[in-house]
Each structure stands twice: as structure tokens, then as C-alpha cells.
Length: 149
Image (cartoon, rainbow, N blue to C red; front, side):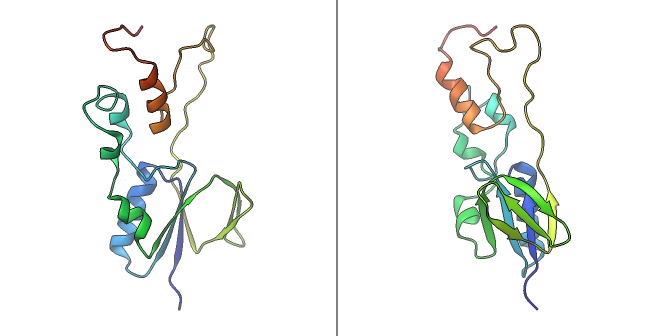
């Protein structure tokens, strides 16, 4: 019997923790961690606090060392967006045309930032702070000693 293939859709904090626990609890399973961010799973709350304040580097937010996410023989990180699910065939369709088969599926997609739908919600200088890329863009616009309104 071959190892169970467990696909986790969502490679953020929740998906990363699920992957870690599955790896620890089942020494035979193959874990496929699928998400569209190029970064390994990390803690998000510090992005708006310690990272922007310069007290912590975003690399310190990772849930595990890089080697866990890149070199573990039973874990495959797939950087892609899932665009379809065929539950009968147990197959996911990715935005780049690839197909990923699985035995079991975990959906850990979390939330997404919604656009601000008020007058002025599209003005320049407004920022979304959801991920590392957003944090880097915001940090590049901040000026030390200036005030944010």
C-alpha cells in the first residue's frame, strides 16, 4: 500500500501548522502544501508590529526552519493557486494547468483582505497589510519620525 497523499490548500499559518502536525503524527503520509505565496508558512501578527517597527526581521516569523519546508522527503511545497476541485477523482486543478491528485484534502485558506468600499477608499497611500509582500511595500513608504493618520 502506498503512502496517503494529503493535500493542504492554503500554505499560511494554519496550513503550515497542519503540515507540521501531520508530519509528526503520521510517519508514512505524503504532504502536499499548496499556496500562492512564495514564502514558507509564517506568523502574520508581527508583520504589523515588530517587523514594521524594525524590532524583528520577517525571516524570524517562519513556523519552521527553511530545511523543513524545502528538504523534507515527505513534504512538497507547491507555489500555485488552486482553481478547481474534482471531488470524485480527488484531484485539484492549479492555475498553471497542473493537476494534483490526493487521498485526503484539508482546506486552510484563511481570509483575504477586502477592498475599502467608502469614498476615498481608492486614494493613493492606502495600504493592505496581509502578507510579507504587503509589509515590505508599506515599510518602503514609511518615513522615520513622520506621523501616520
